[in-house]
Amino acid sequence: MSAGPFSLRRVGLIAQNTLLEAVRQRLVNVLVFLALALVLGARAFRDFNFGAPELKFLADCGFGAMAFFGSALTIATAAQLFFSEIENRTALTLLARPVWRAEFVIGKWLGVATLAALFCAVLTGLLIAVLWTRERELMLEFPESFGGVHAVSYATVATAGLLQALKLAVLAAGTIFVASFAQTQLFTVGAGFFILVICHLQYLAQDAYARSAVPVAKVAGALIGAAFPNFQLFAVADTLVAAEGPTALQVAGIAAYAGGYVVLAGGLAIVAFRHREI
Image (cartoon, one colour):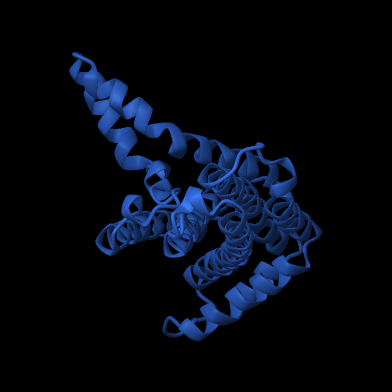
């Protein structure tokens, strides 16, 4: 059956259904609860110091929760929802109708990326509330430590949340690429975490190969740097000081960088899924 022209409406419907299914997943709710609990409970485990260092500790807990639980949520959700469609034969029923396989893949990615963005937005909002409340308390109790100036740039904190959402969108695309040809959900989850580790450490391998005197090693380093995104770029806003945070131009560049890898991974996923038997 001909699927007709590519339809953004069908992509949106698939994404909406994916998001709704993800919200119903017990694992998603557990991960979100743990992340929220870590941010809210950070004050109970903070170092016993006063002023800006304590606020940095609270921010680090928030950024860490966003990165760790967000990555686990993205990988697990992308793998589980992709394979549930195949195992329950709903993908076969859906693709028997006028639906492109590209629409299915893009819709799945969009649903997972939206979930990750909502997760980052909620955690960022909660982190800002925790930092604002604690900063006001410290400014009243220790005014000499602040000099009447706020130690926290909340715009920078919000930017950090945005960059985390972009990183998770790239991770979702990579996981769905693996799911498009993998035979088991377990393999996809394992490969997703493997991609996560490589993307966080690829700059080390790239630097090591670049310093090597062997031409083959230099080529290998360049290939690693091109094949895997550098997730360290998305952590440039892990600071509370506006002067140390990224500029609007830098954020735009990182967004374009993330978009390029999303398009690359998504395109490979579409090609692989077109040749897959369901």
